[in-house]
Image 1 (cartoon, rainbow, N blue to C red):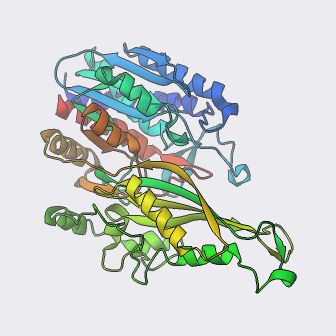
Image 2 (cartoon, rainbow, N blue to C red; image 1 turned 135 degrees about the vertical axis):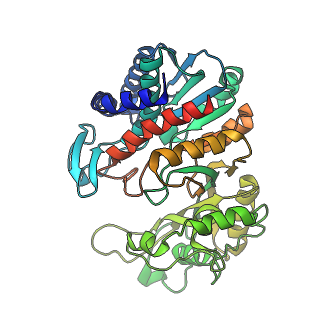
Length: 456
């Protein structure tokens, strides 16, 4: 039987596939909040049961945190591993949702039908595109096309504390010829894409202490050092007037684009004015000698994610605070070493402090950037399959975000990751009223069927 029969089956069974996704979306599997731990167990059970209906030998594997779901299908040809995560972000602020986040709805919008609900795009809808492609394939052919391992995580939205230990302990079981990851999106919401570059991440929180207690600004103002003023000076100094980051040796390991990749990115004709205009901005604020796409995909960043101190409640209080606090994140590229950058950043801040001020640091998660070579013929086969399905030339692109699992596949398992996703720019990931376009869900399922056919 031909691929056409599988695609026809996908089209005919789209209502049932949508109903299954809605069932999964109703489970409030918020991983970061212990109050939802039982719901994370329920989501894992749901996936195990669903995979078993496809003849997959699936089971729930407990971890110190939320469980993993592992499933295996034997077969000839390549061994493909598919990764997704079933946990979701918290829903706050709840009052900004139009409907209950865990009562998903099919809505008609000016841009077409969407599936509205927490996790619809990140990542339950994306995860189910692959599962539904496998379901249609199995219904038509009686078996799946090759050896497949399903690997679903329940802690991606809470830092994945159990992931690396689990992968190390089960490395032989999880090794494959190719690791497929569906947690990305279309370029400018219309061009199918394979992500080959992901930025790494480093988080730092620090507190500057001045006086031993909050002071009356009339009695001590002018004579006492204000930690917020010191904090402001430190943060202002992190970038020069051209947008470059001033932490010593920060750019060690940063590489320029190859001529081939630079030409391909230029061919995408990225409309940065529209990209910024959608969020009320107009001018790229990064390194001024770089293109907008480079700023997002292949250049490192240093961003202030939060700053506070003193009195921030309603009304006014003339307090001179004893402490100031800030959270800083760095997006990393190339061979940048997060441990070295953390050390250099801390030394840089410490050296800037005036007398009477001290600093304490609290490090958050870190991970290196991930770059995938596309020399494996599987990449061009997948790109051709995407092009055929969407009717638009698929592209190799970068991604400004961080997906640590891609690097873990490379470094722990020695497996090449292939990142393909069907999200759109306005899906409101992590925000109220998250949605997944029905077009993305439908064509995503068909895309995976074409890719499975091409790779096997």
